[in-house]
Length: 309
Image 1: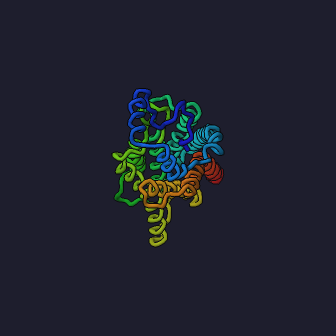
Image 2 (image 1 turned 90 degrees about the vertical axis):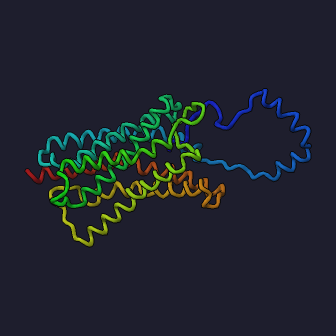
Image 3 (image 1 turned 30 degrees about the vertical axis):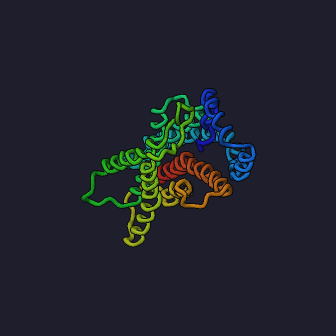
């Protein structure tokens, strides 16, 4: 959703007047107007995306509203957890709430970057992207841990969720590397398309597939095969898997976008247009998790507290 930004100048290369003066004699010596006409007619028509013009104006407002509601929902859930002493042992739930709050907190910064340009510098751009994707990976790992039973020989109940939470942020390192402010200090914080970043980009997608597709599918199959029963209180299965369901389409969009960049898909203007909408709307769907998940879990915590009284 951060591809629609207001920039003072075009990102395309602009020739200086001296360079143009040097090139002009060469052009007149080797090319004629007839050659230019034929060359121009042979060039393919450029592709134009209507996503930013039709939806881009609403993105900053959406991010601010989602971030505000996400912070309020996470704060309300944190207060409910503090008041419900029986749930203090649920370290995974507490860290998940913290991740959701951090994710919601970073959204207004992206909204400001889209509206007025990213003025926080390249380092903070990468840090913001690391926090964004780190929260997603951490929540993905913690949600799976909430579903799985804890073996007796495993780490202590409070330590394992903390290890998973830190691991999620470590998995976000490739995402931080492939994002930046662009060349010449452009006021954008977006994905960089440099050849030397290819393996970092592929690593990021592999991590995404592992956390958001392979891990939940493996947990679901093992749960069915081994007939696991959750001990203690956990959010219902519908809420537990809602996080994966909201982010699943965005992972598909990331994979298709990378295949298109690597020329493994036939590049057409129609495909690029549809993929642009798919990327933006699917990321917006995933952002909704910071609103829906805290309020749904909050409702179940209140219900659990009333039932325990």
